[in-house]
Image (cartoon, rainbow, N blue to C red; front, side, top):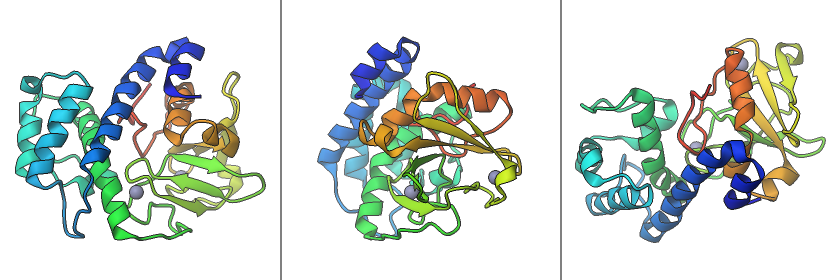
Length: 248
Ligand SMILES: [Zn+2]
Ligand SMILES: [Zn+2]
């Protein structure tokens, strides 16, 4: 299923799909600006930063004058995108609510973090501590292969790593009795795993579901599961493809 089909087949997700379609366009066009950042780089080089902000404004249809504090911070280089996967929002004077600012920075920073991951050439197949071994994020989405470990997916840099089949990658709880597995009607091929030890959750999707679309689309189309989890008081540690952690 692609994002257009998602909007058609799941009308309750039409708004989310429409927004993601713009984000997808941003990500595709941003790739044309790709370069390999140096290991110590915290942000885009100035020239690329200007282009990325312009692209963000155009593809997401947000007038540049509405995002001037953001443009300023990204172009001058006060934003350290490496801090975002650690859930730290850079401090600069902005008119937005923290969640809104975080979502915009997440979208803007994603190409940078992907390029950095690529430049690092770092490949580790097992994420021993449940974190992305490249950028340090605390993943909220996993792919399940039959009878196998899960593959955690980093929503920032796109890296993947295997981890235990049962357990919470956020607090390393491995006692299966502390994890509630919830499957919902109309959400076939994807389930919630709620950790009663740290109150966070992840969504785990069947491999077939993800290979028929992308991890981003599978994450988006199961948005109702996030609402169920969050209404029960569980939290999501990494943003969804719209840059949101708090959904309910
Ligand atoms: Zn990562
Ligand atoms: Zn936990």
